Length: 173
Length: 173
Image (cartoon, rainbow over all chains, first blue to last red; front, side, top):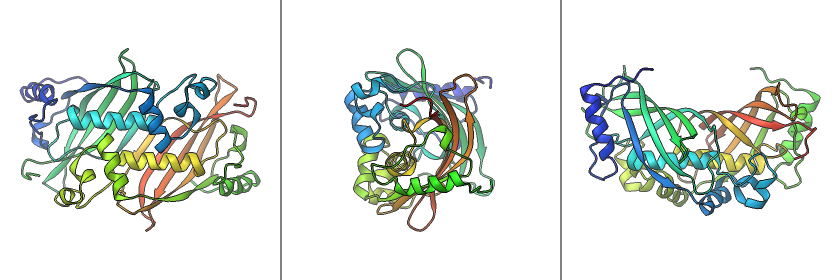
């Protein structure tokens, strides 16, 4: 899909850059256009965080222990894909997608082309793919957003195509 | 897709029931057939767990605080969808899908038809949708598995259609 730059879009790119601060403007349905992009802050992931997540949610050898991971598919310690998803969500919430009323996802498609590794530095680039006002409920709409989570080498560790609910400006949440 | 019961399948349903113990047999590509089902153990989720996950990965009011959540879309404290995904993964790893070499996902489609709420008791029912040996690598194949995460009322809180890598019996991982 071509990237369509528009006056609104340029404005919101500025908003996106300001999103690292708590004063970032919050966007309503009317502020969002196809092609709009947002870039999150970066965050480094440690081996300890990878193991701690795995102990809670994905206790498999390749996520829990460097030595045990060596003889597995991953060839070394790798973060659970669901951990990468959680880190991505935190980056989106704190700096990557300033939606009014918060980021409320109905679901989406997710792939992990590469594993997240200890000491990786991740950031998320999100592009709006489509914007659809609700037919039945004028207070809201849906957007499709493609969020790519990159490591410090520029490799995509997660591709998420998400369907998100967005409030209309008529409702001040 | 119709549920196809076969001798192998019946055997593995027994395996699935035994999966709550550490002695559960591990399944290779050759053991897996379309229509095969697995049912995980159950697990109750507390409000504290919901908030703790949110603090780490999804710090939004409707996941962090009962009072603040009341005036939001969710109308009360709700787990992050990514928390539901993590809980589902733990249930799959520990009792829901006894794959040899572990559960290694390439990605999938995920939806959250209902939010997970404090004190919900979740379990996961997984059905094999397709089985595809790799053309280029005889040591592995891929399966599509549909994992439905149910709450205690029988409502689906997460539907995950996942693509998983499965080892062939020729490779003892």
